[in-house]
Length: 173
Ligand SMILES: CC(C)(COP(=O)(O)OP(=O)(O)OC[C@H]1O[C@@H](n2cnc3c(N)ncnc32)[C@H](O)[C@@H]1OP(=O)(O)O)[C@@H](O)C(=O)NCCC(=O)NCCS
Image 1: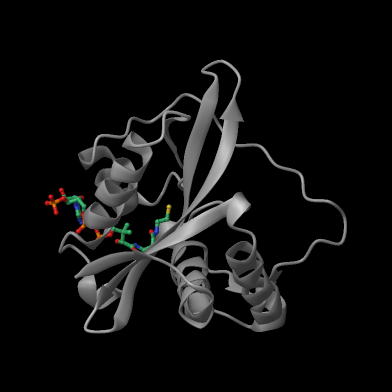
Image 2 (image 1 turned 90 degrees about the vertical axis):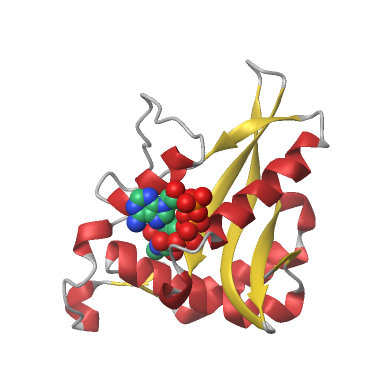
């Protein structure tokens, strides 16, 4: 298995991963044109963050996204771990562990980075266990958000006619 930074040509794989993850963990059908532009937009703006990929025999089998958030309390950046996805056939074999250890090594070399954060749906028991087992602690913070009117990023269920599949492991985005 090889761990590497994503390049622009990885955009289709990353887009597919995000669509699969949203469907599996939140039963949301992401709008193809929005998620595709979102992935390509990040890859075109390295100052906003970076994707790290796990590759096996030339196939991308797992990925995560790192974005930064300044912490004035700590005088440094948190690296937020987002868009975590491992292909089902490769789960439970240490792919995410390798991705996470890789970004820990990258962060160890940068004095400006103070730690990692992520948000995960309360019902996503497997992901919560995985994060705990790799040393992360749950915080007392809850995530609030308010989208601006008109922001659309997934096909509402009634319009898509999709099933409630994946409800058990939802993740707020
Ligand atoms: C959550 C997810 C990323 C984990 O990826 P993975 O490659 O299967 O995880 P790993 O095999 O690297 O597991 C890491 C550690 O977690 C633990 N772990 C793994 N699967 C576990 C499980 N089902 N139950 C309990 N602990 C588990 C193990 O201790 C493992 O460490 P080890 O390899 O040293 O034994 C993957 O299941 C996934 O893509 N799920 C769907 C999408 C999702 O939920 N994304 C996260 C949204 S926040």
